[in-house]
Amino acid sequence: MRRKIVAGNWKMNGTRQIAKDLAVGVSAIVEGLDKSVEVLIAPPFILMADVVAQISSDVNLASQNVSGFDNGAFTGEVSADMLVGFGCSYSIVGHSERRALFGDTNEVVSAKVAKCIDKNIQPILCVGETLEERESGKIFEVVGSQLRAALKGLSQVQLGKVVIAYEPVWAIGTGKTATPEQAQEVHEFIRREIAVIDKAVSDVISIIYGGSVNAGNAKNLFAMADIDGGLIGGASLKLEEFEVICKAIG
Ligand code: PGA
Image 1: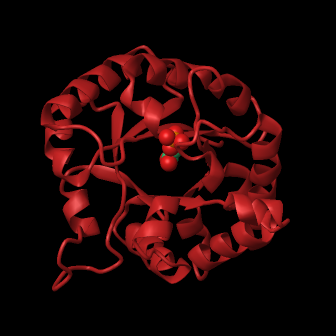
Image 2: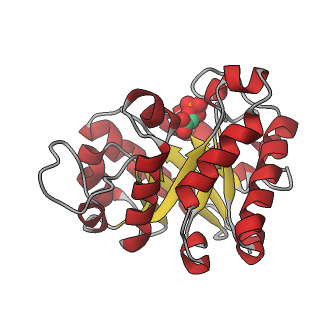
Image 3: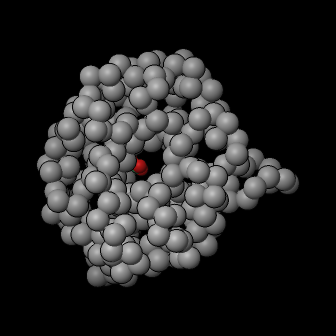
């Protein structure tokens, strides 16, 4: 069965106190939710300890990034083992902000996916096209090549650990959401691409949508056949809004 997932990506926001307050608030939200919904929060690395001290066991901890290396002379990086030590069970990998601003190429993303799986962290693999790519008819070419590069060489069991996030770059942080139909079209394509690799996994893999999801549009997006949840940026920092979004998937 496909899992329903709502993940809050806090990005580089918050302070220790804000993180603690949000963690307490999200725990309370999750208490009132149907247990079939998995709620994740991805705080900045340095706020993880504060978050861990506050969250209930029903809230899943995710990281916003992870190193593709084990350990050693990699100044400023954070390893999968360090994350596991905090109880982190998911990691966002290949977010478009990392691809565009921090040199996360398809090769780097592939190494990070492999490292996560090796260390028992479920990667949330982000894929998505820019506006220019969409307008020049390259959506499927771009998303397909991001997928193939990141998933290359994974076994069926390993592939089954991956969550995919479709995040059109033009919709992230812009207030411009993809319509449910636009998102569904790409989600369906992603599921078909996964089926080419492994049909059984394509039936159960969760494919979540990200890009300006808010309290007003979540329900219609989540109602689409191949949308299994959301990766929420800005709206995950506002508890009332995040609650509405979590309930929209129930
Ligand atoms: P947004 O961000 O909801 O603020 O558009 C989504 C994301 O980047 O994960």
